[in-house]
Length: 453
Image 1 (tube, rainbow, N blue to C red):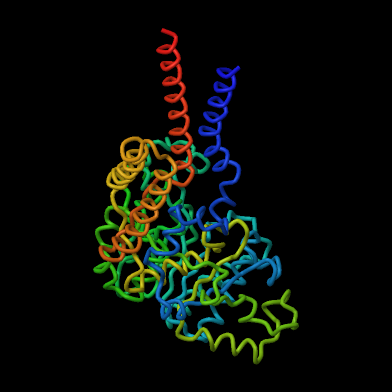
Image 2 (image 1 turned 180 degrees about the vertical axis):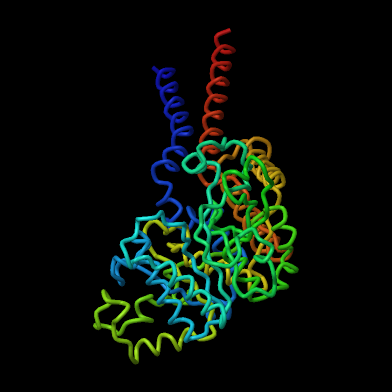
């Protein structure tokens, strides 16, 4: 009976040791990382990043940026991007209004592909008005227009005769964009410091903490087979360089952009009180209650004038705040235009851009860290798993704080590590307890044999 009871105890502990970390991470991962229980939070990389890492955009830069939001809940459906004919006319009217306010920079976080013939009803295609409005605005302010692109995962839908595997991870193909400017995205004029208007890629990194500096782009599907890709800047870096043409000389940005390596920053969420100010797009056209459905003929008065005055000299980002362009992070929720605002503010701030360590170095540090925790359990304090767990937790927090609060600010780098978590420490503790029970069981058997003999 004693043997059966012991065996059941060992099996139960072994199951817990293996299953507990997996179950908690898979089933309760989201709530686990957002838990208010301090011990669960302080041993996660997200906590160290939020609490101690530098890189938050400077408040002066944040205060100089405005987001003009085209949203379903405060604008008629005809002005949303899904209605591309009337949406272009609305954006044209919006740019005409902004030209009277004379902002310093306008970034259009909306891309416009060519509309096939016959799609728009007669008199509804707003493309000519949008092109004219961009020219009018560019005569007074600096303007960046977004252009869409396709990665290797998306290429088969648009370039059916091109093998997607030929594209490298840092390469993409430009969409069939509307020719809103007098030059193309890959023309030399797009990097000319004398130009007041530019194209910028509307493509973000899969890790939204990274500022997308640019990608290697092909003009179209045909060029994938016959030509070479060219470096093209993203929306935020194109706008930042219009504001400061010497920008690439700092933060090691020139080398990072050339190598298609994207640096890190610290994001400001939409919920933060000191975040970016948002102005409804309809609010710079129509007075409240004047019938926003008729946005081209609605009344404008004191409220519109006040909104336009608040935009004078500011850096403006225009975009739709829809569920499709919405991101959930450990810090909170951020819209697509909010991301571009973060990137722009970080690029123009002094200490908000962190160069990433090479992946091999990150892995080496992470493995060494894990080996150190493992060593505490099996060589440092093999007979005291409880004390080993406590020491491992303290060491994990201390190293996490050290890398984020000391190394990152001093060297201007970000260590994207995979350190041991509280779950792995619990797993090691339970595993060590099981081994100790097995060792005790063997010793008791040896003692019985000696007595019997």
